[in-house]
Image 1 (cartoon, rainbow, N blue to C red):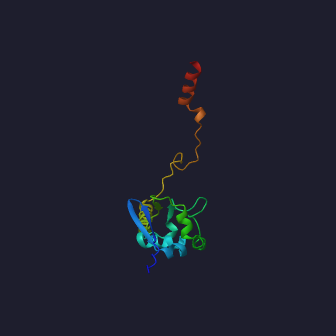
Image 2 (image 1 turned 90 degrees about the vertical axis):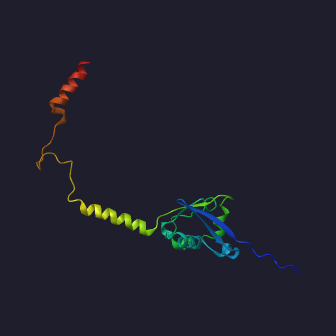
Image 3 (image 1 turned 60 degrees about the vertical axis):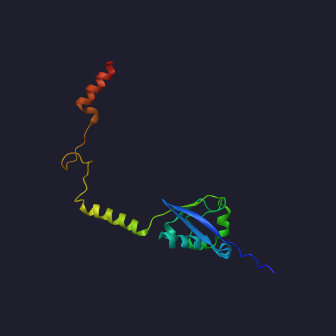
Length: 150
């Protein structure tokens, strides 16, 4: 008697920036896992939190995969996501690691702290409320006069 063939899982190629990853799922995981589980597995590989992940190239037409709440992600089955994945194509993930985001945030805070004061280049004069009348400026009047004569 022949042993029944084991169900073969699936491997999903994922690109993230210049990195190429492959997420493997067993056959039983394909039928039980959700979008939430897929994003958690991506997080373990990349350290990009699920809320920062945007997935491109996965999911059937009309199936929303980005901008969902955690509960909504749990309701999207992995098998529905794979239905929209074309053979030979990979899923592209867009997202940043929290450490990189925090580094940029600290850099911007440092720049703001080093800036002594904001220069208001809209001020006219030295604190006085002078109004510049452009239409009465002699240079502008001369320009208008030359154009009228041409």
